[in-house]
Every structure is written in structure tokens, then in C-alpha cells.
Amino acid sequence: MTPPARCPRCPVPPAVRCRGLDVRRFCELIDPSCPQFDPGYLDVILSESYRTDAEPPRPSVAESVALVRGMKACPYRSVVPNSGCGCGRCGLRNGATVSHLECFPCLRQFGLSLWSVSQITSKFPGPPALGEGIGVNLL
Image (spheres, rainbow, N blue to C red):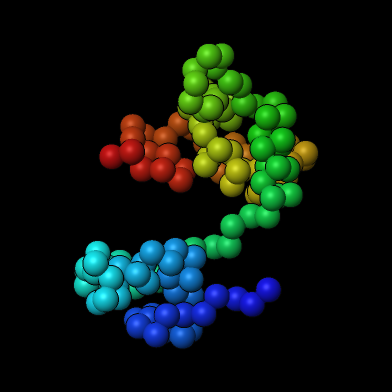
């Protein structure tokens, strides 16, 4: 299968993957012949292209499945029944509410099956301050 080609108006440098390759609508919106043409989308394409270029690669499906299984099997995580949010409570973080965004880095660092309480508690000594999370800032 041939990879998609960049549009002739592509504002993104060749060294950076253009988001227009994934979301063709961006290319349409910077085309002056398009009825919905909006030059403001030039900035959107550039910022989105640089943002996604700087992100770490997404995990494979196999790794994602293994992480979800490891999260569900974690002896320190408990799930509140009928909460609907998918979050759980972490015994290593003094019962703090955690989502997969907090669980996955822990699983990656300390292993899916090897649990060392001393290693994990040294990394996560207690619950975060109000509004803080390992991967999420709520304020």
C-alpha cells in the first residue's frame, strides 16, 4: 500500500509528519478553492504536526492488552463497584483514586507480574496533593 502523499500546499517541513496525512480535512481547509477555507488552519496543522511528532509512540495492541490485564490483576488496585468511571483505588498511594493513566507507567516501570512494594512505594510515597496526579493536572 502506498503511503498518502502530502498536499501541494503543505506548510509542514518534510522532517515532520504532517497531520494532514492522517486527517485529510486539514488539507481541505487550507485550500483556497474550498468553500470552508480558513487560513487559521495553517497554524492548527503546524501545531498539531509538531505536537504529535514530539509524542512518544503509541503502544502496540499487544502491549495495551497486557497493560490492561496487568492493571486488572494488580493486587494493590481495587475498583469501586458501579462507579462508571473505570477508576480504581491504589493501595500503594494510600487509597488515592487512579485511572489507567497512573497505572500504566507503574506497570511499565515495575513489571506486569513482579511486584516489589519497596520499589513502588519509593516512587509513589503517598497520595498527590489536591488536583495533582501522576499524568493529569486537574487544576
